[in-house]
View 1 (spheres, rainbow, N blue to C red):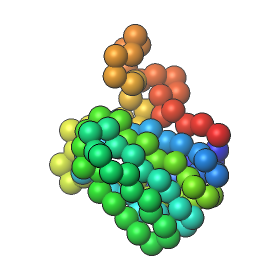
View 2: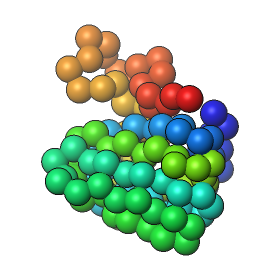
View 3: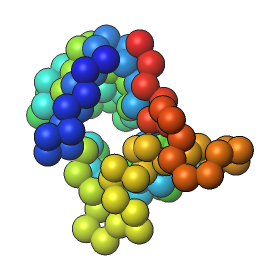
Length: 109
């Protein structure tokens, strides 16, 4: 997977997945392709296509999955408890590790 953090734009291959932890209030904008979003604590999932966006409604785990090769911009909430970088690379809840996990962004192909 190719990830570009140059202003928080992520490039995802088909079925590429990124996990966000405690991202309540963050905005996800699909710049190209299509992305499926599912959030812990939310009963409905969201599918974004080009030029559409959504706001993460809950803390906990949020998964973004590319339904086709996609580029997404993730923008932090205006008053975040932690930075977007920290939430992407945070150790998963109940992890045996302290601090950041080696590859906790949980990116798959």
